[in-house]
Length: 136
Image 1 (cartoon, helix red, strand yellow):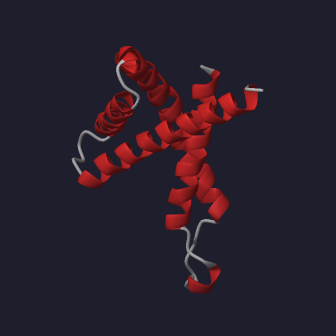
Image 2: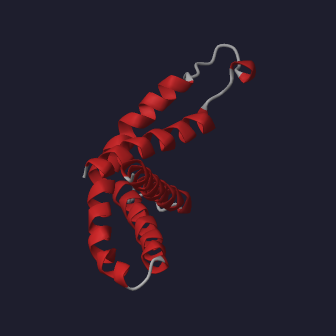
Image 3: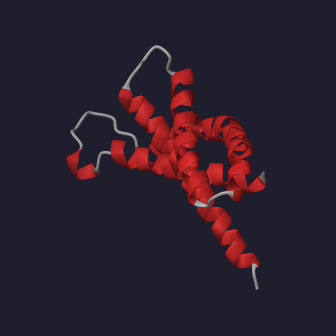
């Protein structure tokens, strides 16, 4: 559970950093008499909104997905990975649908899927690093 929580925090930070980079306006491109947020302000604002979604939405879905695909590990190594990709992407789209039911935009569904897959890949990387550090 701690691994999932740390992975959710890292994923939230990465996702928010990407969003902040996309929205940040460099000083050289700014117009006078217009307010612009700094990169750190954008990052902090995005973290306020995204971190609870990763922690309160992502971790329970991750536990549910692991219970669904836990039995498939005995048959194949690639099958659970592919099913996890589909389930994580679907859960991200579902969470976006729950939050933005009025706006049915493909961009929002894609952003939800990308965010969920980012969490899944960070979780896989974190587990791999823990295994490699703990093995003699």
